[in-house]
Figure (tube, rainbow, N blue to C red):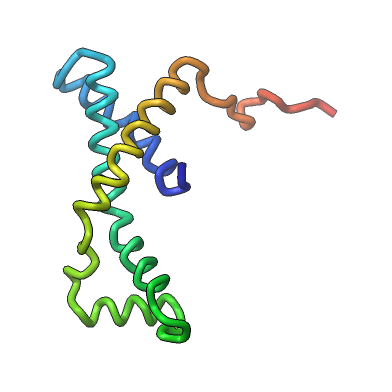
Length: 127
């Protein structure tokens, strides 16, 4: 999992609780699937512009761009819709991977729990 996906992992728990609260479905697996699907859509939407910049930077010839700001300015000059080119293929690529990862991680967290918080005195030694 990437750092960006981990940032949305916590949001998945919030979305799952909202779905349970409003009573969309009471089945645990369906709720986990639906919340993972929502979060994978959000993750793909947030990272699509970044992926476009990265792809343009990597596909360019040596010295075509000075830095990432130059890549951004060149892309914006072609219109803001350019950032969303390839959204459907990216969704088809990232969606299932994120969905499966989040469902597995959520089940692991449910089974094994989260790491203890060091600020509450756990794992601290008295000297």
